[in-house]
Image 1 (cartoon, rainbow, N blue to C red):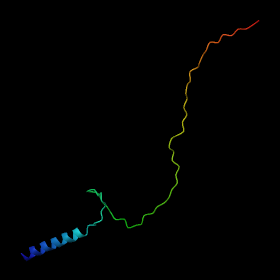
Image 2 (image 1 turned 120 degrees about the horizontal axis):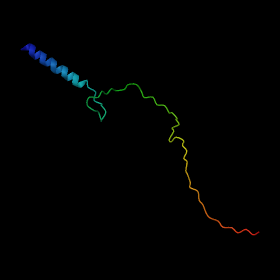
Image 3 (image 1 turned 180 degrees about the vertical axis):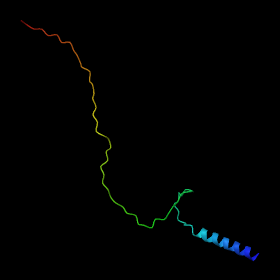
Image 4 (image 1 turned 30 degrees about the vertical axis):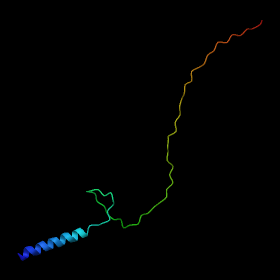
Length: 77
């Protein structure tokens, strides 16, 4: 009986230490099953200037129909 009590006490202590070892500062939107680690390395930022092509160069061919008109002229001889 003493041995069973000792095993139960040891199990409860181990569970208590395991529960306290869990980090308390998880992200607010933490998802179950995902792994989160506290980053101890300071962040490094770098400003980069890039040219981004918004729209590729293109050409457009527009066909304009011809306009005709009838002109009558008088020629004096």
